[in-house]
Image (cartoon, rainbow, N blue to C red; front, top):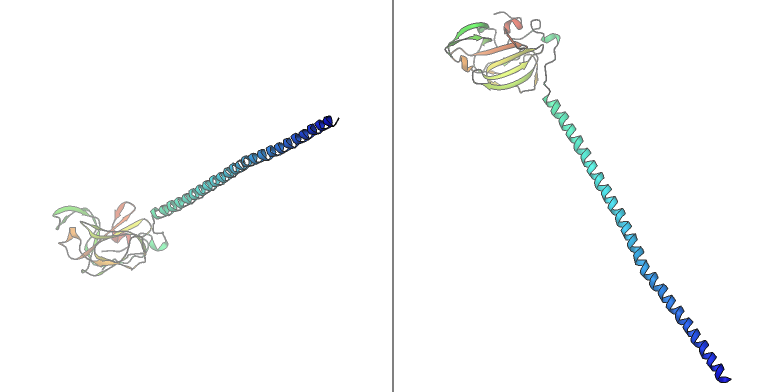
Length: 236
């Protein structure tokens, strides 16, 4: 009897031991798999974070590019506007005081005329040929002051091989005057001047160098040359 009892107790102990071992193994497996899954979840989280960060960076880059393009376009528009404003041709405003044939005009130099206006051919002593003289030569001395015949806008200042130093002025009402044969020049291109303001001082006219010192003075209304004395209401 005692042997049978001992045998049963041993079997119960072995069974209990087996159950305990299985529990320990199961617990170990649970811990193991829990540990291995955690890194995978972390990896997934890290990937998601990276994607979000990349998206944000892309958005920031696109925003920066958009801002840069907008600033560039704004700058280009401002530059074009400034260039357009600069290249727009200025003209002298017409008024009651600068209407050709009607307004008061000063003589640009003295009232003495050395050579009058002629559309017919006249002999030029310096050039030794015949040519029209579409100007009035006002007599003076080298260094004498040359003044504006009326208010005006200086269109150009340049040197011509035949006419010497030239100042071209828009006097309004489509009247353009050329003051030729200057020595020193007192005005600049784009400058507005008043009647009587100094244009410069008298020098020489290369194509009329054999004549006495004088101002070669030309006037045009639109594209046509006109007699300066007529347009200014003066007489020789």
